[in-house]
Image (tube, rainbow, N blue to C red; front, side, top):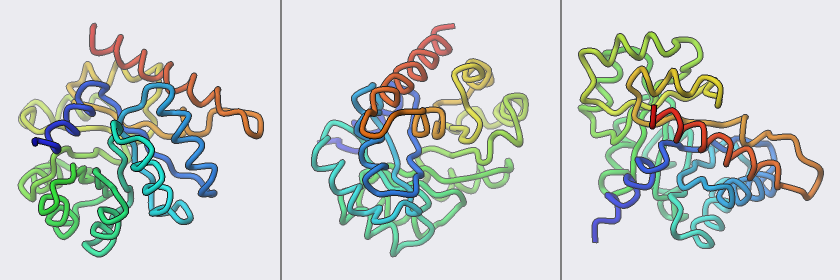
Length: 214
């Protein structure tokens, strides 16, 4: 079974990877669950979340149809531990050949961070499935458009500062997907009421759909 292909297709279908970076494990779990209810189909729980591997394990077990992954994976040890916990996606803010090797060995989807054209190419050569342009808010859509003129064959996903208001500019510049964090994960909500998170996820996904249809 082409499970990795199916996971990549989930990202391609929605065009979105959710970054969950919160200070509390239960909050991260509840926010991720609400975002999934809002339509998110690929997400990463960053290693900065307390007990991140436990959160990944819970989500991967409860949502087998969602690509649940680990973020801020900086080395092979962290990569393997995440996969053992059930992660199907590994994301790093930088190029880590060791992380990419583990991801490819176990057929997890890999997203490698890059900032310059050289780093983008190096990530692709090292085996990344998707290149994460980070921090994207420093560069902007025009930078992506310029870089993708010669490198349009490499799938790039900007992360940082992507909102429903500007997501159309990013897709017009040629990106393959986008990463979103605070707009969804920090949607204001009352204690125990995560419906605003689900609504924020729906809003963002709808903005992406509209951007891609334009």
